[in-house]
Length: 295
Length: 277
Image (cartoon, rainbow over all chains, first blue to last red; front, top):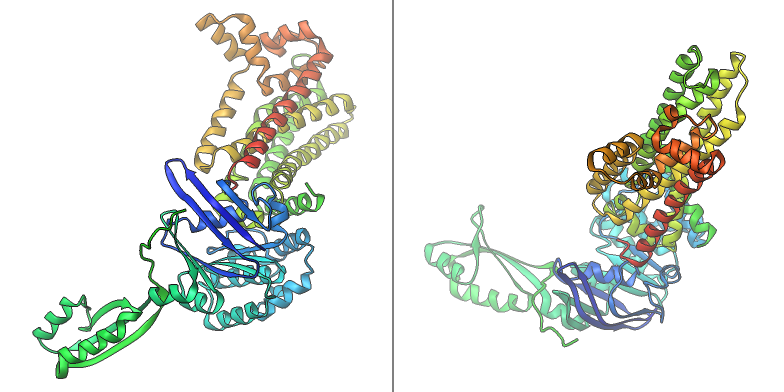
């Protein structure tokens, strides 16, 4: 499904949630929607789903999602970050959704089984009584089973264990190429394998809209833990932004690109006073203020 | 609005209603009222011209016109705003479920959940009375039930509208208690007090009372009886003499139903045009 957003504005009373957002997503593209809390990601998701009205032009496959929400929703699936507190038993809830989507129950069962969920044993349990991970797996299974042409996923693997996350990536790989994805995430392990384009929002405006590789290269983070002896070493580390933890180790988080030069400086400056170090890339991205593009 | 969407929402909400204690509370209250009036009323002598089973049903209906608005408001005031709060509305509306279907499904189930047990209890009261050898006043029973359902319709509509328009559930709850308090106090006697205290014109007082669905329902319930000042109250007595019993009954059916439909349409309009979540 093609997404076209032109000069979208949204106010909630005095709060300017979106201030002139414009972007395009071609059919079959996979886009990560990133930005700090309050940057407008959820509002934009809701606008694309037709749940929230806005000023400006928004089209999903040529349709206005707010005015033609049901028609758009037929070809779209959504997984929220926080699972809703639905009191209905799992079987009742899935049954209702399957009916409105004309979705064979067997297909949901098959997808759920991929996440080690046995729907028959869960059918009578209230949805809200399930663990966070199980709720998330159920909602993902439902979304993937729906054959939607547009998937809107908000931090979909946040509550999943490693095995389920792996299954999610496998199932996602199996989706048709024509499926468009909008993924809200801060996690590199989600963004890296799933998307080719990144749309960064900052204070309701587009701060970056471009290839994922370029974005990740400048937004990756690395963490360094250093154990060193002597006050002189401490002074040098403090000057470089390290902070001493309770265990005696010095910690700093830097951009991925700065990791190797810093390691070289460390060994040169501290020499034998350097007792140990641990450097690792973080699976989160840094959300800095970007150059806000003129909308 | 597709029937499948309406049916899916209605089924989910029916499950919610059946699981909640609210429905149980309604049934218990209806049964308690019916039981008390059967036990006490059938043994009493004629009061205000009503005797035996007729008096039991009359007393029951009188209590119900005060209770039904409260039950209807409590049963509907958190249908939409709570679903907004807990995220379920966002998830349901991310599927092809129209907003009209959602609102209609929830409203229909809540109205049925309030009206059907009421009908059951009223028929049970009549049958209990007939077991003692009394004839069942079917006509009065049918009229009373129709008026009670119209009254429920009015406050179900108002409750749903409050739930859509007031996003904060606590504020919505406070507002419906206020609406109920005004509805049950702005009957004849409060109206007359207004008239005497503030020298409001009688026409204004009568109009104020007549726009109150509780008052019109109450007058309609009494319309089948002899229009006396003691039973109808000053406003009811005035309107009964002006309009006649049949018109009073028609007003008692039509006006609450109209209020309910108007409130529901206002809710639907706001729900359709505004942000769903």
